[in-house]
Structure formats: C-alpha cells, structure tokens
Image (spheres, rainbow, N blue to C red):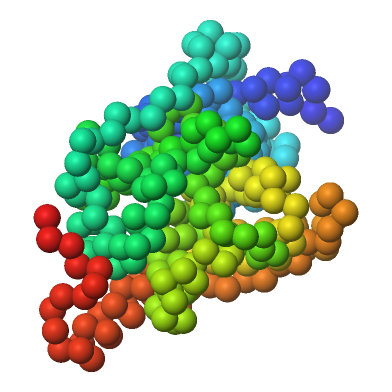
Length: 317
C-alpha cells in the first residue's frame, strides 16, 4: 500500500522539471503557458502542474497524470517514477506572480497585410472579412499580425488570438479567457452552431457556404465558434448566451487530435439538457486536413476553370 503523503507529493511534482529531467524537454514561457520546444503542441500552464498535449488530445494535472494517461504506466510505478525524479513544487507560481492583465495588441492605422493574407492567400470572402472588421472581432495590429477577438456578455474584449501574416506564428494574447472565443454570430436566432479549431477555419466555412449558395449573406444564417484548439471551454458560455442553439456541428481538423476531440465532444454534449433544451451533435470533418484547405482547393478549381488570374477576392496592396 502506498502512503497517502507520498501520493500527494507525487501529485504536486513540478511538471516542467519532470519533463526536463525525464525526457530532456526544454520549455519557453509565452502567452501564459510554457511551450515545449521539442513538441510545440505540449503546453504547461503557469501553475506548472496543469498540462495538455494537443496533438495527442490528452491532458491532465501533474506528472502523475501524464505517466498514467500518456504512457499507460501502472499507478504504483508512476508514483515511484515521479517521486524519484521531479522536485515537489513550492506554492504555485501563479500565487507569487500576479496574472498578466488582458490587453489587445495596438491596431495598425491601415490594414496593409490583413486583406492580402486572408483573402489572397487563404481564399476567404472579402465581404466576410469586411463585415467582421466592422463588428470589431477582426483587425490588423501594428506588427502586421491578424488579431481575432472574443467578447464577453457585455461586449467587452476578453480573448484574442494572433496569426502572423508571414511565417507560421500564432498564439493567444496574454490574459486571454478562453471561455470567450472568436465567434461569427447569425443575423437572426438560429438553432445551429458550427464549431472549429481556429478562426480561419470558421471564416473559411462561411466562405464555402457563400460559394455553394451564391448568396453573399448565406454565412449569416448560422452561428460559428472557434475553440482556439480542441478544448471545449468556450462552448458552455456560447450555449448559455444563445438559448435557441441546440444543434452542434463539430468541424474540427481532419487529423488524429481533431478526430478524437470531435468524437469525445459529440459524446459529451449529445443528449444534454441545457436551459430546458436538448442538445444534438454531429461531426462534419473537412475533406482535407482542415476547412481552409478545402476552401483553397475550391478556389484553385475555380481559377483553373475560368482560366483567369484574378478572382473577386483578389486585393491589390
């Protein structure tokens, strides 16, 4: 029998130190989390205990959870492994270092790169981009990144994710609250909510809807929500604020993590009763790796069929 004090010490073992000593991983601190340099999808929160490995679709609390969940190690052996490697944490860092206040990145005077990146490179409908800019959920910052904003029930910005227009830079702004994700709300009450991993996929899905119907306003018939990953933190808030929504359509990425999250979340929400309504769920994965890849494939076909270079989305900068 394992002593309860030993188990408790194992549960409080510093996850960063554990990974560094056991696996040789190193971490960089940014945006309120520690990101593994060797495996960028592995993230540890500021408390140095909570972790999530996005590409594997698993997460937990403490190194003990990691060994049991990720490596299928027997509980007793996991306790011995953790107490033999990782030091026990002092009071969590977040208790000694105040959390960073949420602030939106400063806006650029002119959106020089936003249209080129979203419309020309990503194929997103320019009318949708314009509408989202007017709703103040989308803008370009002074570093020429695209910023996607989420608001709380009072309309105050509480979340923002940033996407670089050059390279592959992406991340959430420090202090962001993931309960308030990037949303594209319907223009009238709708029963349906489409759910994506990223804002670009949500915008791409809306663009595909317009292209399929030939109606520039078709995208506003239903709601869309970005989870900024595969965590469902933003779903309960959206359902609470939109009492007509009872159909959830998961359009997460077509990769192992996205497929697993889709199955897990459909099972989690299907049949649940929220504010006197029964929730129903569906999975509608992209054909390619994500919805934007599907949009770009359609854009390429249209260009080939028309045998002309410019499309209505093309924007000269």
